[in-house]
Image (cartoon, rainbow, N blue to C red):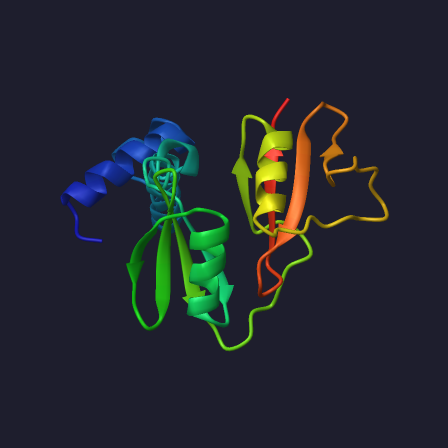
Length: 181
């Protein structure tokens, strides 16, 4: 390190703080490396503190877009648009977008959808019984699970009072309606 440079002055201060004032005037040669490492650690720690995830609102102000894979866009239009009543907002040969109360649900054409055994999309509803009855009148069959106690409509009530009913789209994607307690 060049004598008299800003870096040397800074390192002298760091050494003085870390090793005592006797090293501020003329630090031993073997201390320079330790001081540089100490300075690097201080700068790195300050940088890491500035970039903590809880301080950076990366996606908190962004709109969520749900994506569901479907094999046949025409069949998906009939189900999501016709049966579920979601207006089609956009279409292309590769995908269709339906509007779900201001949120975008993108139905993407895939060769072979791989259904998940849990809900990939759920709708929060105010009256689950009325919603289930309306969907059933439109041809939606609600899924029953052996491990859950469900009412005549297929609605399960969670311990906190939340009610959930599951159904499948034509590709087997697990969907649900939820009425929170």
